[in-house]
Amino acid sequence: MRPVSLVLFLIFTLLPFTAGHILSGLLERRSREQKVWVREGSSAVLPCHLSPRKTRESSKQLPDKISVLWKRHGGSVHQEPQVVLEVGYSGLQKTAQLMKPRVSLQDSSLRNGNFSLRIIPVRSEDVGLYEAQVKYKTEVHSCHVELGVITVTLSPPNPVIESELLSMSCNSSHRASLVETCWFHNEHLGPTSRTFCFSSGTLSIFHPAMSDAGSWRCQLRFSDKEIISATFNLQILGFDGPTSPVVYAAAGSAADLPCSLSYLPRAFGKRVVTAHWSHLAGGHLEERGISQNLSSRSFPLHLPVVGPGDAGQYRCAVSVGHRTISRNVTLAVVTVTPSIQGPVSEGNRLLLICRLSHSQGHERFQWTRLDSAPTKSKLAVAARRSLEGHSSRMGPTLELPQVSQKDTGTWECSVYGPEGRLGAVEYDLQITGAQVSSAPSILSGQVTLGLTLTLFFLLAVCVVALALQKRARAPAFPALEGMFAANVPWKSMEEKQKGKIQQTEC
Image (cartoon, rainbow, N blue to C red):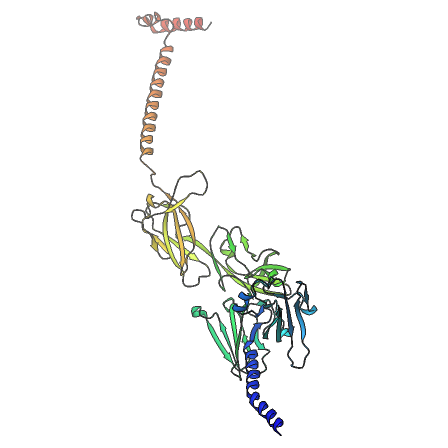
């Protein structure tokens, strides 16, 4: 009986000690197990490192004699472990066929005691318990990491189109029941940050805009107090700039209407892109142009010369694959209407009215006199300055009570909005009936004096010519004048005179 009692005594004595060691070993193994949660499609690193003490002790021999084996136990406990990656003593690697292009060791040299497993990208079927066995010298080091996957689903899938219904759902491989899902948009970024919490994991956005793009984080809270989250970047294919852009252009100038996508379509795997521009005029759409560009995301419409008839709403429709998105652009034309058409006489009252088609209601007007610097080019450099008696004036109407020569030149009407100067139009004012300078008066006096002297000279020439003509008509025989003065009978004189005349004619 004594040997039996001795054996029972030893068993009951050593049992607490052995149980304590087994329990401590289990606790140590559990403490070494880690949980890693990653979003599907992203990268995961399953950590496995030697302790700093063991690394220092074995640093000289680690590169020479070491082997690493990573296995996955899968989601079920009874499932046979599958080899994921194996590195032998010779450095030869073996990888599972299904994970061959996606798994690698974080430190391929293994010199720093880092045996972590990298998976890029992570798939939903990669969930499970991973175990690493590292053998060096006569020791074996093991790591246990549980990989969980969070799946974020977009409906419809990429590309997410602006203004189309969008649903985002967030699920995970965690087995506990889901209690709450919270969505965080642009956390800690000021007034644009938003938070939505639901009992389910789906968030719907009825009219997504470009402001909805950016960083989103879904947070899942489960009944076992587990809280996990995943972050992703939401990309929305839409248009850059304001929702309803307005382009201001002066009548007679050129205008460029913008149409630029937020991303290159080929970033989403789309290679067929066409843009159609149309003008809403007279109650129907007029086709203005079709362009195709695969290497750019900008499809502007260039109008060489715009007039009041070109003002209105334009529509840019971009077809990306089998889906089409569109944006309206308003062209506002700035014109100047004078109260007097054509040249203005000096002293008249003149009104210059600055008109804006398709006003948004927040525009302000300012009139400024321009001073064109002399230049050989057709486009003179205009410097804004305040003239004497004519400073910059606010309002759409510029009134000149009595126009004078100093008002001649170019006047500019500028349109301003909350964002600054929007556009401007120029008006060239010409005034008649005014002297440009004193130099023409002096020249006019010299011309008058010259004309007077010329007339006097011509008059003198005429007098001399008449005198010479009168002298030329005098008788050829001056002695005959004395013969007519003699006192002779009239009849005999008359007969003699006739005879002389006949002789003269012969």
